[in-house]
Amino acid sequence: MTSNPASKSNIRGLLAAIAALGCLTGGVRPTTAGVVPAPVAAAQVQARVIIVQDAGASETFAVNAAVVRRLVQRGLVGITRKPDATSAWRSLVSAKDVVGFKVYSNPGPASGTRPAVVAALVESLIAAGHPARQIVIWDRYESDLRAAGYFELAARYGVRVKGANEAGYDESQFYESPFIGQLIWGDLEFRRQGGFVGRKSFVTKLLTGDITKIINVTPLLNHNRAGVTGALVNLALGSVDNSHRFEVDAERLATAVPEIFAMVPVADRVVLNVVDAIFCQYFGEHRSLLHYSTALNQLRFSTDPVALDILSLEELDRQRLRAGSPVGKKRLELYYNASLLDLGVSELQNIRVENAP
Image (cartoon, rainbow, N blue to C red; front, side, top):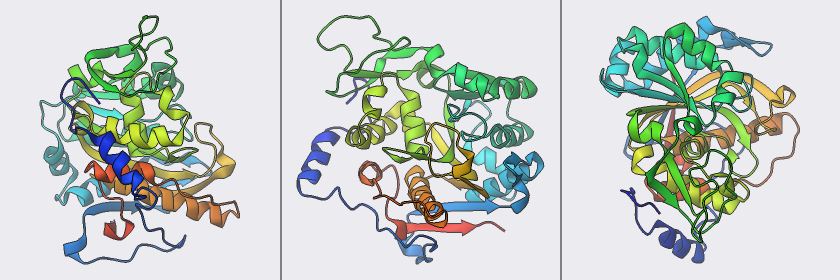
């Protein structure tokens, strides 16, 4: 999988063996759309998700920043079980850490990770005493970050904004697979020649040489092949180059995304995952299609990226049903593979959902 330390070995062989036994078709027990998972006994709980909600968080697709700030404070306190947001941040990061807020900016500010949510998180972290220059807002491309308004946000708070592509990629840290990619400008091996060129996806230098802790902030947005552009897809595909080779096929995604996420420079830095569910867009993928969106006015917090994605898949189906739209078969292999790599919980009945007061 990787040259320098990978978190798992021989995973592809393990997954192939399990697939041969027909075990990769289940993974999650679906519930009827609209039904909230029943509480489970404490001894069974493996994942915990905090949902904070306020009907005033938005109006006609405009985000109320003041309300979102309160949601962030409540979510941080809830997920860490600390008395206040300052204590919550101190339990997640130290003053020496460079904290990277990974966003998904490609769809723009309306359907991607919303700047108001990231602003509230950044404000809260700075208020807790963290140095502004040790905060980085990042995504794959700086052009997407600029178009979504993150450069203005960074200037307002004195934090940095970086693109993984512009930062470059680390030749010593990579994910390797047999699928040959069509390299594009910005990929480390672009214009190189050789039989093995295109088999590797290199980790951004932002993670190998700068950022020490990751706050993974993703919108509640559908993905045509993965099901949801969630915590796993957002961080994994944004952390390496030569990733387009995986996005053309659901089976490739189901293997590559969990394995990339599980790499030491990625998974070991993640301390919190946040789903921006102010709006839920259930069709459109990377395009902003607000007529396929519902205002949920929620933020969801967890240390478990798989559990968040599983709940997001359920929510997307629920909103499609409410809109009278077709609900297709869930693509669960990616999330089941992620649970095999100990990235989180893919069993819905083992996820405790807590609504913060």
